[in-house]
Length: 249
Image 1: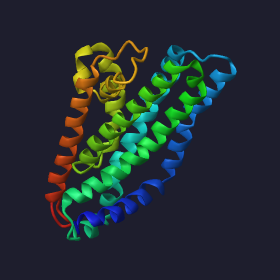
Image 2: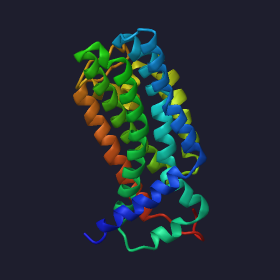
Image 3: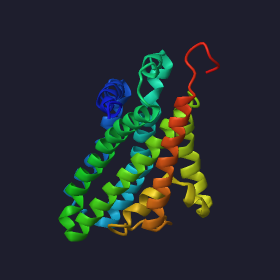
């Protein structure tokens, strides 16, 4: 219990590191784009769930906002400390490595959900909620997709950042190539796609009018859970074997 008590302090330091970067301001500005587009749709009288889901949620929120925000925060949770060498002080503390990993992962996931989920919820409230009960359910489903996607992306690239300093570059490549080009050409890739986990999880609330959803809600939640647990377990294992400066890392 004494070790767990260190989690708030580690989380506070992580939040300060992540929020103190200039690129965080750019991500905040990017998260306002779905809201602005929703306002434009509302002014134009376009409150159709299908049109909103395809043009704003799928094109902007799922394809650009979610992966970019979550990958940046996930890869940056340990990245700054590794780059400037301050991870030495963190590893010198008598705190179990799983507590360190969990604290940083929860912090990064929370920020990612705040930006992506908050943006999606506000945009849906503006443009889809006026459509009635289905609009409310569609908005809730989209927010759920942001939550599941944020947890998966952050966990995966937080773990990857402990193995390479190019985690961000790999993440952008994954976002553009694996979940972009390859997923369109190879439908079977859905089982290894965080995007599909997010869209599949959303069907637990509402079947969004997106043709590319290929996983059931049960399968999506299962695969997402396995990915998060495995990623954090690997991150903990790696941190336990992380060599301080003067070693091979």
